[in-house]
Image 1 (cartoon, rainbow, N blue to C red):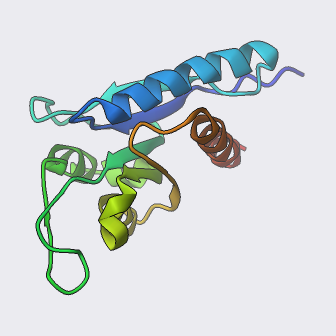
Image 2 (image 1 turned 45 degrees about the vertical axis):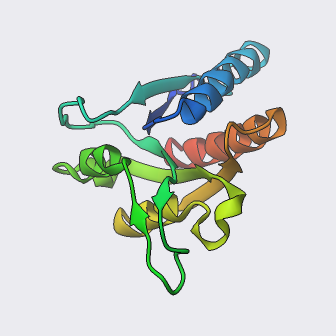
Length: 159
């Protein structure tokens, strides 16, 4: 019997275009994988911004969260997170957090301890596993690695 895997839903925010670029490339990779084998899921992308109206998510989704920080080093001098609040508020809306089945973070490794801090915070706040991270726009290797991690998690959820 053929397995038709539902597309993986991804909700993300992209401020400088890095996350959007990464996910658009991953979507292309998913199409390629899906054409080789139908049990490899496609990607369904949804971008959230400050203009996005809250909506009820009825399907499981992965959240992709970049880290943008202002000031502090995240360890002893505190930090101010900037601009990803729209995504956090969207996931926190009604029961949406219950549908969040994993968080992927991105950031700049120059931030040291702050690298992917926002994604780790989301994972904690929304009780979802922190699945993977990549730097800035990510590499082809990152795309293959993260797609594989997500597809495995997706098949567990849909089993």
